[in-house]
Amino acid sequence: MSYTIDMHCDSLMAAEFREGPTADVFDCPDQALDIKRLIEGKAMAQFFAIFVPPEEAFSHMKYPVGAAQYIEECAQVFENTVSRHSDVVAKACNAQDVERNWKDGKLSAILTMEDGVEVHGDMAKLDHFYDLGVRALTLTWNFENCFGAPNSKDPLIMNKGLTEFGKEAVKHMQEIGMLVDVSHVSDGVFWDVCKIAKVPFIASHSNARSVAYHTRNMTDDMIKELHKHGGCMGINFLPAFLNDTPGFTESRIEDMVEMALHEKEIAGVDVIAIGTDFDGMGGDLEIPGPQKMNLLYDALIRTGFSVEEVDKIAYGNVLRVMKEAMR
Ligand SMILES: [Zn+2]
Image (tube, rainbow, N blue to C red; front, side, top):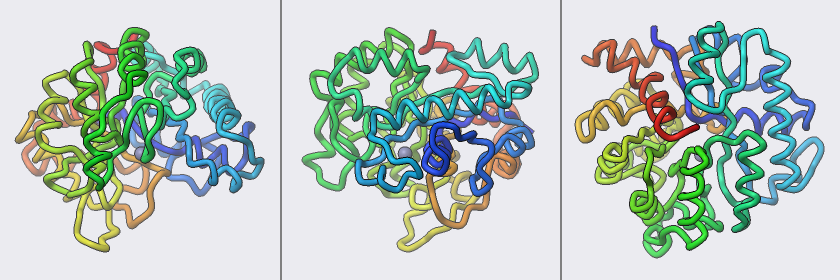
């Protein structure tokens, strides 16, 4: 069974919403992800996203705060979690940290942010988030922000690219070693990032649009281009991104395998990675948490992927990108 580096989960948000800044991600019984399950599933590293929800969501928190405070508190929840489980978990800011932690018998926790909205066009704020420990940023969520446009059914929005600030910020992120994450962005933003990128970037949790039609997924041309840039994309387990049958709410392993087969066929195995979206999706999940990742790897082997290829998908490709793009 292979180790796993999962590029996306929303478990931090869920913990912060339930318990506030003193929360421990691994001490929330209703969540998909906890330390026991991560260890059981041989997790090598888990990305923990600070997902910045739309303003109206904050009123549903146990201790409601604004977006700026929420981000600080999520970072606090991340730190609490790492320090309370320091016998088995350690923070990582780059590939070398992940490898060192692994040698020490610990899995790595990597802090990321989903939606650059709170950067508000201010590079100093971006640097502040870096100082807070954020090492990957999903440029947009599903609304336009200071970086650019999100994915959309409206072609006018879908073709919109990076803002002037977005272009500068992408350059800056790559210079300081913060991964540029193009999941959720418009096709226009994706192509603009390709023009600017000097080191590999990621689509942390995105699938192939030609297999499951959804604007959140990527076209074959985009996947090929991502591969040319040395990047990788995480297979997202969310039902609608795996299977576009109307009303279908199952997240099935056979659809994940089909996604991997397609991505391999058009761009090669080096572009494929894992980005589960645990604790950020509903539906009927065949892989309900990290403890069952072996079901996917076994299915890939049965379909004809070699052990080396599965290792690349499970953790190797992300580690490669981290080595090239982070400091
Ligand atoms: Zn997302």
